[in-house]
Structures are given as C-alpha cells and as structure tokens.
Length: 114
Image 1 (cartoon, rainbow, N blue to C red):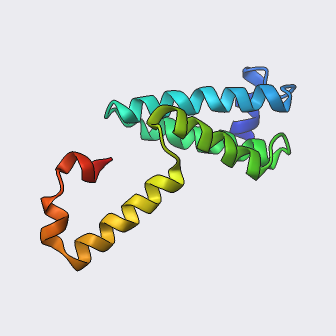
Image 2 (image 1 turned 45 degrees about the horizontal axis):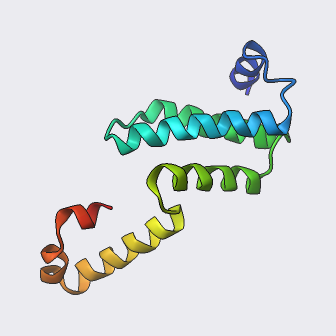
C-alpha cells in the first residue's frame, strides 16, 4: 500500500477529488484499451491501473460501482460494445464450438475474434 500512497503523493493525487480521480482512471483506461485494440497489450500497465483503481476504492475516493461504470464506459468508447456483450458473445461461441465444431469453424475468423 505504501507504493500506491507514494505514487499518489508524487502525482499530487492524495488531495484529488472523486471527479478528478475518475477522470484520470478513465484516461488511463482509454489508453490501455486503445493499445489493446491495436494488438499492443501492455500487461504491466493494466496491472498498475487495476491497482490504482483498487487503491481509490480502498482509500474511499471511489466506490466499486463507480469504478465498474468507468471501466465499462471506457471499454464501450474504444471497442463499441460493452464488456457484458463481449462476455455473452464469447459464451455463445464457446457453446457453439463445444456442440458443433464444424459450424463454429465455418464462421470467419474475424467474427470469432470480435
């Protein structure tokens, strides 16, 4: 926890209000999602962002619901669909692959990846 608090102090975010904290989280999310969309996963950056969001929850700056809404909005802005829609589609594809592999593989690969 000391590392997170140190980071917050260095960046001047210990005195940050909820709106500014969420705006910073959103900007970081947009950057991570844009990189992901370009096929340039930055796993360490994603983990740092998760820790930053968790720190905001732990410090009482943001609620879990506010964090979830911010994540969902950024995902929707970059990818054009919600994380829930993505998860639902993946479940359908997994089910189709298990029940009818020929039909699954007859779908264009680009459709299976989206």
